[in-house]
Length: 181
Image 1 (cartoon, rainbow, N blue to C red):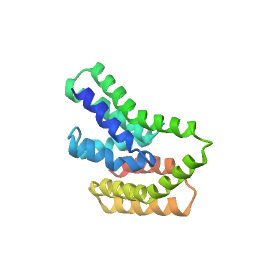
Image 2: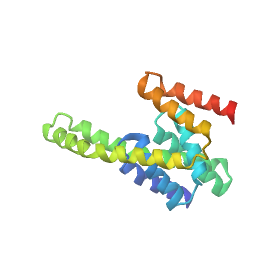
Image 3: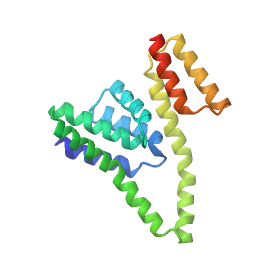
């Protein structure tokens, strides 16, 4: 039963997956942690961190990790975990793939392109709100120390004032975590 529920929930998430993986984090959190109670908030945040560190889109990586972990916790079978990962990943990508196919099919239609631009223009503020909600949710789970605050401010300053890669910032944060914690 968990396998069908994983497919269904990630299919629903994929239907509204505008703005990419970062914008999906609040929706994933609500569905996975609050509504379905498949994972704790700390487990979820760890999965989001892993999803950002591994190659590929955050949403696909998160779906794969969540599907695997949730299925495994339910059955303790590796085969079920692999199937759960596959179904969750399929669910989250199938609707966007079909939508992009549709858009590309009518790529030359000026009416379709005009309406897509209008939709995207309206979605931008909502996407920023979702990303800020995600950052707030994750930020509130940090059991902060002064060192955490310094790392947060330094990261924001470096990202806004320099051209340092966010990947390097993640690696530096991990290394500093190993040293200080």
